[in-house]
Image (tube, rainbow, N blue to C red; front, side):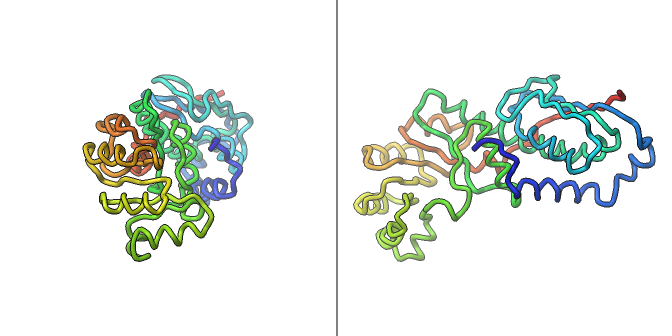
Length: 279
């Protein structure tokens, strides 16, 4: 997924963020700064990070008006070091000031997701395992957070409940068991993944022809045993209890995928500074 800001959801998210913060006007800037004052504002990394969301800046300023030029020194997916300029904007000083917090909120949050994603990807380098994101995203920000995760190098899992079949344990219970859930899911004609929680469920899923198995909340030893038993009959995804400290060990079991909710739900906003100077 490229960092494409053309989707209507993105425009609505940016508009709502601006309305939430600025409302009827930035009374401080209006009181202190002459209406015709020109300035330049630059976003600067204050720690090592992976950039995400700079492509939003032209959209943010376009919605407010008064900005003559936006220069993106970096684009989503690129690394930045402390002191490095990420982007600069030139134009009306009031506009730069009133958009400062919204722009920083997006850049710091989304770059935090991308930076976290890259850490997971780096940890499994050299294995065949691919890192996936999940649906554990901030409500209303899923598209942006998934684009940021992809910028960090992970593969996007399903966007929502509407674009892939993933049978979780509650689906299995509601359907009446593994076989019943799989038989109904196969009727969709789509690829099907099923989560299992015991060896008995694994045996039943494989007997039913499951081609993608999600092993959830198993120990390293259990994962290794299950992957040996599967013996290439299905792709294997791991989840649950996997973090930066143990992700490589799990990847080395031979798993095809590891899905990690922490990439989005636990990403820490990175430190980016906005520096304004008069033209």
